[in-house]
Amino acid sequence: MVRRGEAMSTSFHGRSYDFVEYVPCHNWIGGEWSPATDGQTLDVVNPRHGAVMGSVAMSGATDVARAVSAASAALTAWRETPMKERGQVFYRLKRLMTDNLEELSWLVSHENGKTIAQARGSVLKAIECVEMGTALPNMAAAGQLDVSRGVNCSTTYEPLGVVAGIVPFNFPMMVPLWMIPQALVAGNTFVLKPSEQVPYSAMRLASLFKEAGLPDGVLNIVNGGRETVEALADHPDIKALGFVGSSRVAKLVYARGAAASKRVLCLGGAKNHLVLVPDADLELSAGNITASFVGCAGQRCMAASVLLAVGEVQPVIDAIAEQARSVVLGQDMGAIINPASVARITRYIDEAERMGATVVVDGRGARVPGAPGNWVGPTLIDHCTGEMPASCEEIFGPVLSIRRVATLDEAITIENASPYGNAAAIFTTSGGVARYALERFQAGMCGVNIGVPVPREPFSFGGWNDSKIGHGDMTGFDGFRFWTRARKVTTKWALQSDWTWMS
Image: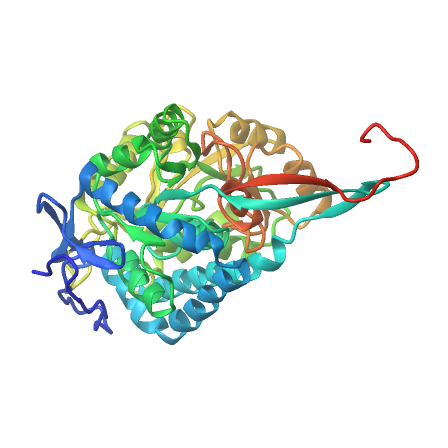
């Protein structure tokens, strides 16, 4: 067992889907590995194999207080480091992540269950987030203007202090890097709480940050569950809190953090709608729609969940079904995170079938030879209605519910009636139809002929309505502004001959 302060190698040696064990995952506080104060741990299970690959510390308020103390001790020196120099850490981190791309990708695959191709894609997106961090010193150059004779106004972005982030299981390396570059380049110090189901990517990131030259205490990691989250929300010295997860928990975290006078931004769940109209291109539409609900086993907030089929579009639906049936489980699509999620996803399919829907492609009971883990295959449910939970509740699995509608306006009405507002897309070859839909969708991220309309950096990520609780977006320059406060400075150095209201 690694004791507090003892060196530990975090390199991951798996380079195939074969099961491998890994090291215990400890907290990273003040540049040292340390177990939870009370010694509590939780098994970390490889979803593909359903086997324990290691353990993670389950921390309490005492551990959070230690991490905040370390972050507070590092704050002054880090804040006084010029922003350009803070940004240099992310140049070095980008190189290290690129050099270790295969290791990081296999690590994500083993702890999360993604296929290696999807894991690699998520790490590449994480590297893109790091690259955004390298650009922030130039983007943060705020404006100044002579507003009167001898009077100048300028703006600077100042760090808030110690800040924290709570991230989910589905993208264990990418989502932390939605927050950390903006927060650290701004001059804050950070406490990260990864998902206890997938703690290893954050652990490996801590080692790479250390290698990249990040001073001890600037980034700290406290692993755990609900008790850890509540301690972060309550701690008076944490000035801002970011969260990504379900809408139910997002609302609880927002309320608790705001009650403690924190700045809080919480990204919640989704029920994304894709609208398919008769003039859509068959090949483009079928491929994008299938990839949207099958990719990452549907365990992403941008996955297609409901297909609103307008009029006669059966050829496209047939092509989607054909492509879904051709997916090789374990090779083209990865595992579900845990058995409870398999049971939940299956329950939605069962219920829709009992209520009269047709299961066109059935992924229930799927198995992968040699991998006795958590599996649900691609599932296509046709003739769904608004009363079916599969049509209106977040499933978070590889399930696409089809609702048949007569008009585009009917489809838009259904999309807008959802309490969520994360993403919506339309498949059409008509610019006029696309614009009509985009102007009416009640969603923060919209697409045309693309099933996963994720904004790429420097554009920011964030939905509307119940998909986001708080103001602003999590990534891009909006994220930088979330972790900072603007200081406005007005200066006058010379006596002027005339008078203005500012004299």
